[in-house]
Amino acid sequence: MTSKKLWQRYQDWLYFNDSLGLYLDISRIPFDDGLLEQLQPKFGKAFADMAALEAGAIANPDEDRMVGHYWLRDPDLAPSHLKKEIETTLIHIEDFVRRVHHGIIHPPYEPQFTDIISIGIGGSALGPQFVSDAIAPDIPPLNIHFIDNTDPAGIDRILTRLKDRLKTTLVIVISKSGGTSETRNGLLEVKHAYREAGLYFPDYAVALTMEGSKMDEQEQCDRWLAKFPIFDWVGGRTSELSPVGLLSAALIGIDIHTMLKGAKIMDEATRVPDVKNNPAALLALSWYAVGDGKGEKDMVIIPYKDSLLLFSRYLQQLVMESLGKEFDLDGNTVHQGITVYGNKGSTDQHAYVQQLREGVGNFFATFIEVLEDRAGPSIEIEPDATSGDFLFGCLQGTREALYENGRASLTITLERVDALNIGALIALYERAVGLYASLININAYNQPGVEAGKKAATQFLLLQQTIVKLLRQTPEPLSLEALAEKVHTPDEVETVYKIVRHMAINHRGMILQGDLHKPSDILVSYRTEDS
Ligand SMILES: O=P(O)(O)OC[C@H]1O[C@H](O)[C@H](O)[C@@H](O)[C@@H]1O
Figure (cartoon, helix red, strand yellow):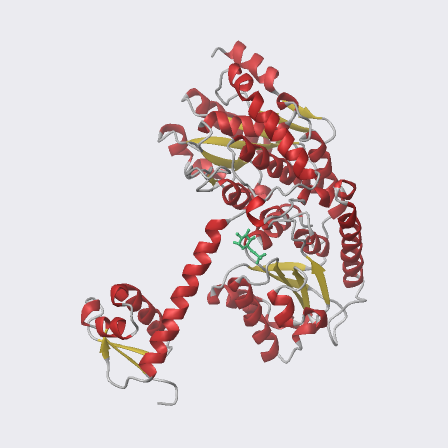
């Protein structure tokens, strides 16, 4: 396409939101203008699905749930019985945060809380991590640390760093279901550390979970410093603008009202039932066009701004957990999805952009351009050139280089990275995923595959407990085959081997004898501490 025609296409498809100062450019996504015509019926249904969802329909049929994250930033949209709960919860959050900041709520024998440990995983971590990394003040009122895995060394790293400050550290435990094992493990590890430090854990703990959840019952969270609800009509991957994200954001000094405002403005923009004037519909159209509605091209997220580094990680859950489904709503096997990866520019140009430019063309790039280079003036690096100009040039140059080699891209342009734009960005992608899911006829709001993984993990732990129990009762060493036989898993010798190897390395009483290079010759025995 000639540059003249490209310029015209750029202008024809450019979306601009003047309330936000946000642009969306899909001109480098190749599709015939006829595609939009062809997709109008699907978009008509997508807009109708979305309107019904916002009106309280059961938009998540597999779990028989409403989908209400849009109500969080506009409670007037919510069913009347939920509106008050949304509003009062926000007031409770603000009041709690104000009292923590003013030392009215403080740790025993200390004037103020100084740090936060946030324990949660998936949607109970990725949003708070992205938002705090993007827009927390450089000197926040409290420093936040995330335990988002059941990795003992990762937990130790945070507890070691906080050793002298545990006594002034607030612990926020986030789990909608209250049953996620990684979060439960993190909670028990941190509780142990507080006990070891002579600190009464409930004086430092805040719970975010569904009323009556497993965690709520087991931990009696009513005895903790505070407890905030996670609403069952908010999914984990769309919970950043619920108490899940708002509490920690407010505690670290982020203006949550402006974040909610940005999301609300974007919601209004993405409610417009006209593709060319709806940024979320334009994204959905672009994804559909470039991947033929089957996710044939990966979504590479490259924000040219350090503060947006974690956006791709956040989108991995929002996009892939929503769209990565085996069946469509009619029960057809579709194996849908769009793969998301990326970090930041121009840094990634020195890592994998080489492949994007010349290698396998199985992707489309999403550039995020931020117009404001920094708060304040820049020095000249070269005559009439600042480091921000270089960053700008790298983005534009990479976009052009990809296009010249037949690689598609779209560009979102923000004025700056602040609470307003982060709220808008989150809302933009929540809506785009929802509209795209309608186009491809899948349920964006369940996650059946995750349950399968949880069940498999439980099976491993049950087998491990069976192995230990048997070895405790078996004085003589056993071969792996004999051990597998005795625990009734003769076909899982390899699994038995990995379990005993992992336990042996971690000094859990497991004794391996023989040549470790030849697992089949190994003999296994067990020695308890007192034996
Ligand atoms: O908040 P929780 O109930 O602990 O769930 C944490 C995460 O667990 C699973 O992985 C779900 O698929 C995610 O959507 C959810 O965010």
